[in-house]
Image (cartoon, rainbow, N blue to C red; front, side, top):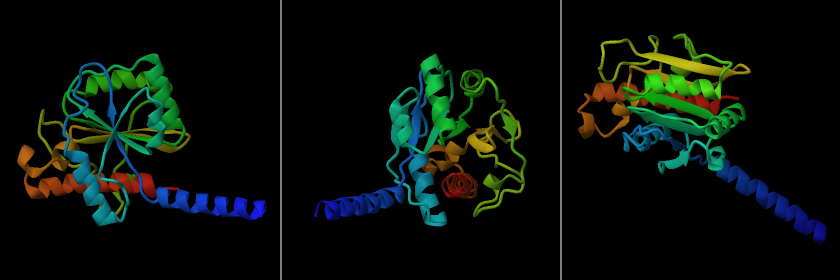
Length: 219
């Protein structure tokens, strides 16, 4: 009888685990330093809803918030960081983020204008041995359901610079994707917030869907 109970418990655990695995939650990364990590609050829910509808992902539209140094970081397979200003990682936070990314997590950083110099400074604390490299336009993240033959689209104009997408790889796996001079989050926000034309918002949403599809479907 005890053996039967053990088998039932194991089977139930497998069923529950499989059900949970089909419904992911992602998070916004909360950092210190004074930058507005909380900017573009409607962006991720809108993008996730679009991705679920267009690519079949099953991600919760309830977006969590997690601090860089928290052990809760490991509960989320995908985290998103944005903002306009300064950010600072302590040694503990940098090590925690490093462990998360090396252990299978993924970070998308979207410069909302003004984040770039601070992000580049702090990411060297996380990966002193790696450099940000620009992804070629042929990289799979640009060719999921939606094709971007010219790389990331320009969503919000700031300095007239071309949009770029950078990455950090660990053991051949892309663990961090950094979008610069594109401002995807502005395109993901409710249309009324920034007044972007619908065709521009659609470009942003489609690349966002590609990013999620790439992260959640790769082996």
